[in-house]
Length: 336
Ligand code: EPU
Image (cartoon, rainbow, N blue to C red; front, side, top):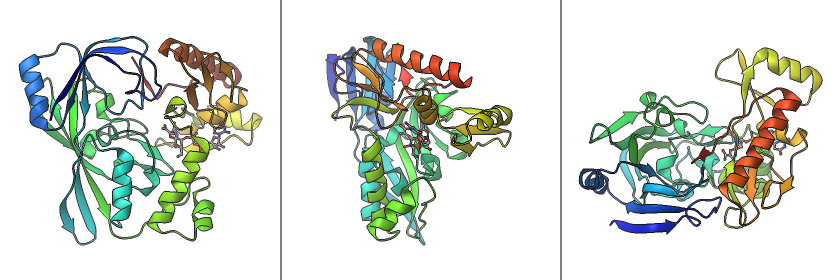
């Protein structure tokens, strides 16, 4: 069922809680509703606003925002131990994870408590604790605004990478995702290799599906601020991927610097949080905005900040990291 809002305050629809307005916002449930909107209204300026967890508004939006609200989680196929689900774009990602864990289905548990909706997960290929959305997403269905029809892409066609997909590249601004297809398994496959996960799972009594979910939730709660309390958008920056020589030069000077293999063996992924921390900016505050005191990758709104104030802080962080380490860090958050 469609709900429509005009001149809407977006403060409660973006996790940074910045107060900007949009000319119009429409919540949609079905793909028919999306098609009807584009056929009838032919909006010139439009954008999908999903959970608002990865966006920073720096000005009012003079166009149409489309928000998915469909709550469908449906088993569409079971083949041996493999279970395939159809998930509406409006389902809260963590509700999906909780549902899967409850059903004894493996694959999503390491992605517990990531804020946002299912339809946004493929866009930046959300990831945490050694897992990525691309590991489970089989297909993405969407309305293609340029072609004026529904289409779908399988996993390979989505060209997923680290916080990347075709939806941030050639299909950017062209599609409205309506559902994703996810493939899970009844066979246990604990992934405990990242950070403190193994220790936390052992403390809870072993590698069951429920314990892994609980461990990830507790690690995240201990490091990442709750958006209901402190406005933020999770990692504000992406971890930089640098040429191997750059990483070696830095490691000679900072032997304790965290570094990880990148998709290209000639490159190395560094931890932006560590670089910002070591640049002395963890916990830094300037008026209403700041760098989170427990995780330097997260910029926070202490209350009443504007998007421009957050941007000014982000620029300062980028400049100081570049000055100290010679490394550029890019934003993960979409800036509008
Ligand atoms: N570190 C510091 N100081 C900090 C933050 C991190 O020294 O303030 C160090 C940590 O000790 C660790 C390394 O940097 O050695 C990496 O930190 P962490 O394991 O916390 O992960 P991350 O690289 O900072 C990424 C994702 C997170 C995800 C975690 C866990 C990105 C941009 N971020 O953070 O994703 O939860 O790994 O898998 O890839 C998000 O995208 O919004 C997000 C929170």
